[in-house]
Image (tube, rainbow, N blue to C red; front, top):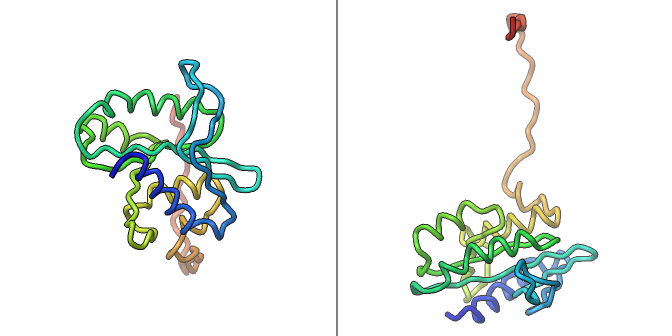
Length: 167
């Protein structure tokens, strides 16, 4: 799979799973300048009403120069004055870069199955970033039940006095 094919796969995934929430997905959108002053273009631009989210797609199936570009890509995304993330997949990332991506709050592993494009554990990280950005809280609590207060104990709990921590 090429990087272009991966970006198309992610765009297809977004449309299939989130278009009913009112998003529109655009490819190759110019947005201001990069951190080194070059014209910036993002792979995917997700628009919903007056909110937008930029997505850069990185697929690496063999070792190469993507490792050297990833710290720049993360810094460049972080500098974008709007929500956004880097989605990634492939087996060609070095262990160090993979750890960097896994630890980043603006990177999401995402590899939808091209045959059905369903939301799965392989897409969960991107799903969660989108949910947090657009306020789709139902995605985060799916399958969970609201907490119900437990009955109060019949016998009161022993009273504990707060102690002075500093003398």
